[in-house]
Image 1 (cartoon, rainbow, N blue to C red):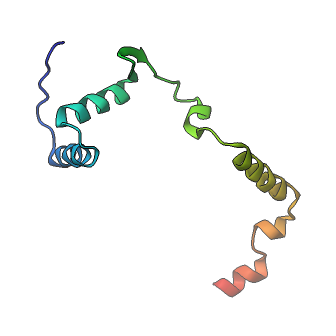
Image 2 (image 1 turned 90 degrees about the vertical axis):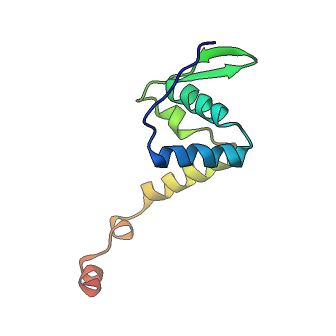
Length: 100
């Protein structure tokens, strides 16, 4: 594998790399390799490299995965919002006057 040299790393980034290496008990090189893989959308699975880039507009990836109880709680909240009266969702003019 080729070696690369990265120059001009700012102090904050260098500190973050060192903190991650210490916390995970990894070498600094392993932390940097993992950050590069993640940032470039390349993961290693059983020694094989695969692209993992997703479209920025793909919200299903950003949202993660919910289990059944989380989905049920979310649906319940959405249903409650859908049936709520507008004055329940926004303060009335009288309440706003009292707050000012």
